[in-house]
Length: 224
Image (cartoon, rainbow, N blue to C red):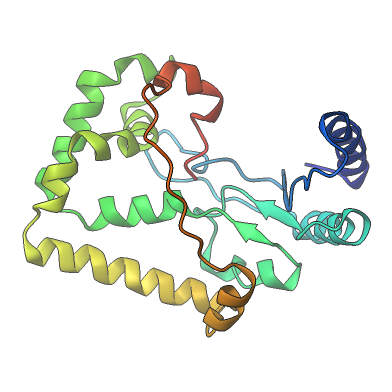
């Protein structure tokens, strides 16, 4: 796991490097740390997820040091989607500034989707993503780790799903959002959000070229 000494080493080197570009650059507002989780969770051979334990003491120390010494908002928790429900109330208690939850929402969609949608996604993975089926992986592990990439190829089918299927998924997501807003202590915070993070319209031309996926391998596991 990350340590306070590593935080100091990174921030001091980062600030020195930043200053070489321009003395008044703002810099980062938060910092990601390792506290025992991994992006998307640890998938067992049967496709279920291994129990994960977050080092909340480390998270508390790093968040406090990031704020008090470097003026950051605090530490970011990656891979929080697959934690047990009783863990989430701890994040505001230890001063976590941000947690990443995408995998949990994706899992809810697949868990509540019609069988034909899930089967279609798995067929796509088997046909188009064979190169990601690493040696030693069971089929369950492969399908779990790759199925998120089937959303794009099936976008129209997801949008045109019958109303009953959409309502089932929508209600499950709403229930999870309600749970998270309570546990993370962010109910009734619209006024605060509007005051400190006002929306600003930004209009930029669409890039004429885009990076291909093979050039983005460094971020291949960040959808947590």
